[in-house]
Length: 445
Image (tube, rainbow, N blue to C red; front, side, top):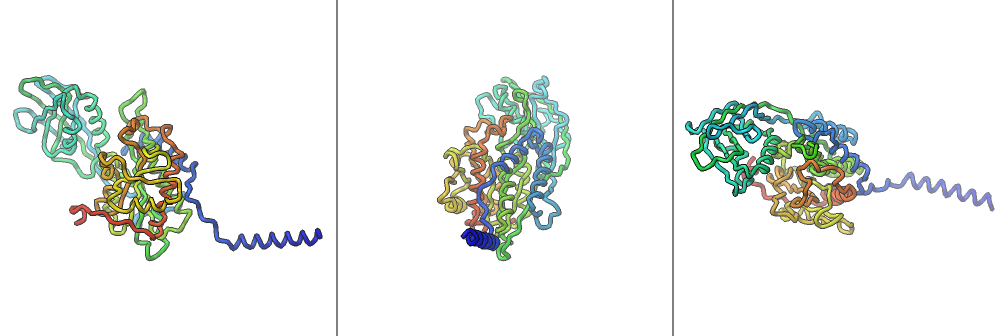
């Protein structure tokens, strides 16, 4: 009996082994490894990245992303020799600024220049610039916003009651000195000073340097595996730049940008690895890490200009997913939810799971047009941003305290896993989101 029993066991083992060899490999779970998410997040938000400023640590972050795309096995965009999508922008720097009000010089740290002109030499008696006075009761940010892109020469005197807000404007201008096009021909000079009740006499002398700079998006692809669908593109994107070095707070000047937007960039890399392992994408997948979002979306604007928008069926732009959303754990929201059925498709694909996508709860913030999805959305692409940030109450947004320690990495991993699962029917070609209404000036491009 023992001999017969052993023989039976042997035959069972052989048959089991044969069956295992012939069986299809198990489907890869939509779960994104938590260890991958933490590794990428900590690397992108590390102090050594120096806040990923466009002309600073962003270059280090770009090299990290290139290494990740190479490791995963992505391909460059067709026609590109590498993952770097390079383009030229223009950097302006104020090299000298002197402002005098009523024969009294104003301290340099209380003046600000927005200009692309090499030299300025203005005075109140030569009508070279219009004078604007902003009083203590004015809404400074509302008045200032149109002046950040000058359409005339203006000298602005701002009541010292706005000192804190003026510093914020100065910090913004300092980190927004890179432009898609060569700036000019108008300039704005701002000074924090009380003009009093008399006539305003002023003199301005200034020098500005303008030089071309090379910026780079990092873009990789997974070609579509179905010939009939391979020309159709699905984009997963985030911006990898942040503010860089800012005014010190308690000895810390590094704006690490752990949530904004190292979290979204982490998601893009994790999703690229996930879909590469699945190896079943009918449509071509594009994974893009944009530069210069914080200074006007220069990277995504250039990226959009190099695509045929009719070939892009959807864009998953991922912006700040490191914290728990207003709706609680295992939720995120989609901007522009009512503009296409993109969100409805994602919701349907998550039925039966613990995760929910919700419409944007902050329509007053105009988030749909404040992130990198906007460039393609204006061309009619169903391009939406996915986020969890409670932006009206987020005290860490654009501060040196946006650190990894403020994030909920478990919830962040759940968000990325939900994106992977909810995107499946779009990637496979089963679902195609409805198009947006293209803006006339863009549609005619």
